[in-house]
Amino acid sequence: MIVVDSSVWIDYFNEVRTPATVYLDDPPDPRLIATGDLIVSEVLQGFRDDRDFADAEEILRTYTIYPMVTLELAIQSANNYRTLRRRGITIRKTIDCLIATFVIESGFRLLHSDRDFDPFEQYLDLNVLHPPT
Image (cartoon, rainbow, N blue to C red):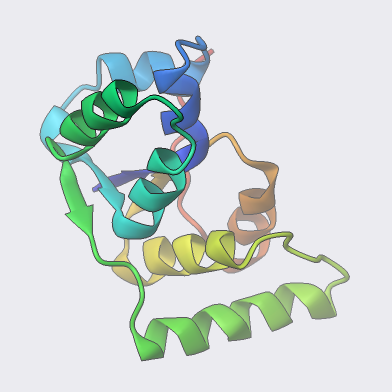
C-alpha cells in the first residue's frame, strides 16, 4: 500500500502540480492508494468552504483509510522521535512521527512532500515513494 500524506493531498486539492500530485492523478494501481484517519483530519480541517469540505471528504472516502494510532504505535512513535532527537534531529509535529511510524510498522510506502519525513527515511527505514519528476 502507498499511504498518501496530507502534504500531497493539500497540494492535490489546491491543484498544485508536483511529481507527487501527478502520480496521485494517475497511479499505476489505484487500489494501492490509501491514507489514514489522522491524515484525513489534517486535510479536511483546512477547508473553509462547506462544499469544498464535502467534495474532499467524498474523494478521500474512495480510498482505504487506516486507523493510524494504537497505544503500541504511540509508544513506538515516541521511541522513533527520541532516536532522531539523539541524532540532533527534531521533528516539528507529533502527527508526522505517528504517520511515519504507522507506515514503517505496517510495511507500507509513503508518498509525501514534507521534509520532516526525510530523517525517518534516512535513519529509520521509512519506505518512501519518489515519483519521477
